[in-house]
Length: 354
Image 1: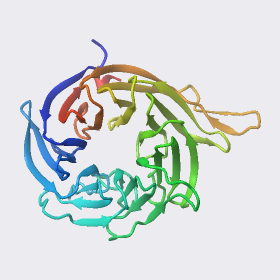
Image 2: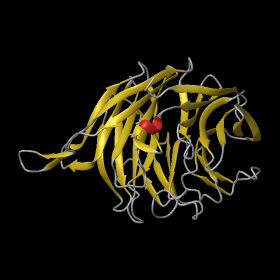
Image 3: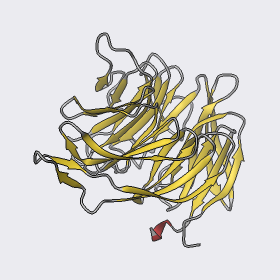
């Protein structure tokens, strides 16, 4: 019993398809997003108290929600940014959900993914959002600037547009430095440097990239987890970039199905959870090699990948897990949603001993 245990604390069935859930910072509340069968958007706020989950607020909107983030919000305002099925980017004040405080027609098609940085005291520099869409375009937004993105990354003339499934901010360790990683349905992973406005690195992992996440957004790039179809995930060591080989990485098979997500523990960047298409959760710990870089025969530095150990696994649902979010405030507390229209609050024990 020395190992961490993954315990289902409480589950709550809902009457809509769940796509995302996020903890509201500095609270015991979380927000769930999705779409009703009638094609409208569901936004509900729940509170965890006394071993139960109670809905405290809800709003139904004309368009279905796909994704959301608090990443660009201040801790005082706690405003929630969402991407919807029609390509709209909106920011909501949770006290008054009647109208968004910010709205922009971000993309021509569904916004698949969203991430934020520069808010919540995480990451240096301006608050920014990044969205990725089926239209193949990745856009960076400053919520203080209406309508127009501050950066747009799209395929060049003659290149085919690939469905962008995941975006993630990283490297935000100074007010100027910042990068965005984007993953696509054909297995492409692209790393855009927002300081030099250039493509810094790209690779292909042969299977659609479902999720990308840096272990921390607000430090010099350290590790990047990439999960894919065909039950594989990759962890890249982002400290050393070789001019031709790029970043060192490890590949692990897991879940015997699509690995939908990877989520790093906010209190320990070397512990992360992967979520599977078979409704399973796998808890991993990354171990660094004795030396993180080595010189090749030409004297050029290249990275060395570490290893991962499976600490615990549990199957909670028969359907794919659509979202997972660790509580930033309470170690081991998390919320996850699955396509069985159920929200689950989960407690993972013994994380402080790892």
